[in-house]
Length: 254
Image (cartoon, rainbow, N blue to C red):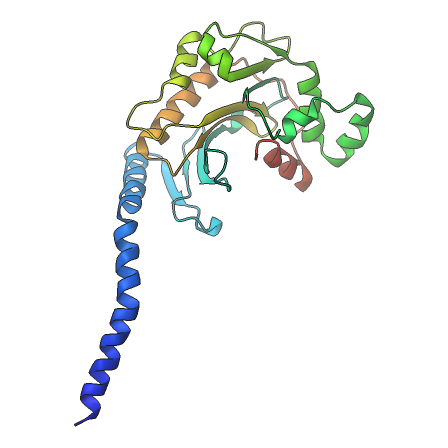
């Protein structure tokens, strides 16, 4: 008879110890889970394929695939720069020789792609043996010229670089304004980047937190508009080494 109350007490303690943390977690992540469902449902309504990137270890990371592009969201690490998430869209069919890039005008740490412009040409052969993708990017940053968009606020915030065959800015004044003014209900980006490389045409938003559906759909519309303004890519040897892929990832990872 005495065993029953003891079992009840143990069970009650177990439920308290386990139930309170689980309940708090469910409560605190309710908004996050609702946002994830909105992104998933919004993507599926458009006929796009949505899946979670569970292997990353971030419950908010996802990938959306459409016939012409791939959107990926994932953690960026660090909380001292004003952004912790990368939301990017890639158009694989527009891959080619690096001929275009947009980078924020930032002080402080420099990305690998920025440092590549300072490398002497004497190291090109050795760099190409290590990574053709990295060598072609270093060549681009040495030869590229800055193109103004005509929108003072955009030109003050971003540097648009292009090779000589791009005589006009692929960022029209209207597109520049759209990059600067995201919808008020979207997660506002800290900054953005864009570039072409042997893996595709890329547009990336650096966000202060996980994106919502408005952020995703707006990035897609910006990417599609940018893709429509760029000329056909110059063919380049496809990346074939693991180091090429690592170098391409590191070049825009900081």
